[in-house]
Image 1 (cartoon, rainbow, N blue to C red):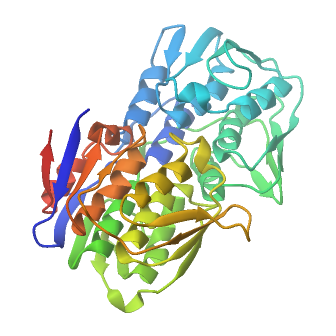
Image 2 (image 1 turned 90 degrees about the vertical axis):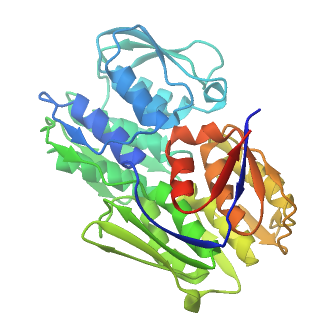
Length: 410
């Protein structure tokens, strides 16, 4: 297996980079554009594997569609294909076949979709036969598994002859991503109502618009980590907005407590070292931004700051079981991550970091590779299967070299 050996000669990171468009925004805009009568150009589209997979599937004439590892792509295509003529088989990687799709499928079936499980009930692959013949316009769906299920339903709702009322059951996870979906739909001419636990969308037509995608905040999070773990750090990232739709932009405020300040001016995000705000203990609830969990856990490990992590319930159904993976990999540098028996869905992180050239596994999870890479600012490390980063940030290793990291692939 290929590995990359990473070090940094002086602990000082500085540079100017341009990160690709947000994967979350790109994937939503691609669906909205495809549902419009007159699709328009999309600029600064994400160069991630997930987005490129969605582009290919939307333009494929095949009856067999493979989303590979792309969870968002699989979920959005499940709903999208319900509106299309003919029967399609939608499949994915072996890991994708272990990730639940049942709540979305059952909601779509309740509306009138014809969907068949081809292997294990509740999981991919699926046979989807369209177009959907609507039988009802009021459904309910669990809100505590994946906001992407709800976003998928919302995006096809205005194309249904009776629209859709969606009742959310339980505590909503990743709310900013659902709000992003509804906000982007509004930019494409569709109005909606989201009050309490009820979303209402009436029949209406999408109005296509030329769209420029903001750069990805999830990818920017790794640069916050590099600055946090540096001796001196200043990184400038292009094409960001002061008022972002992306939930992970919360990092601009959250990062103050681990010694990082940031600002956006003229679409440039500047990230700088500022130890005046550093803390000795932190408690973080990731319910609205679960993709930041690995990054923040590694930052705090590198800073020897203990933490209580909360709101991790969705991490077990990601590309890997991210809580289990974090627990195993942090242990390699002397950091303990253990379930807090006093509080449900809570984990305590503690310990003092010990660097003895650890070799980190990635579990086919792009975020494991990128979250642990900044630890090279604390000492020599190795990361297995470095190519996994192409899922969301293909230029990650090249950008590390720009910032002064030394990489040896072997």
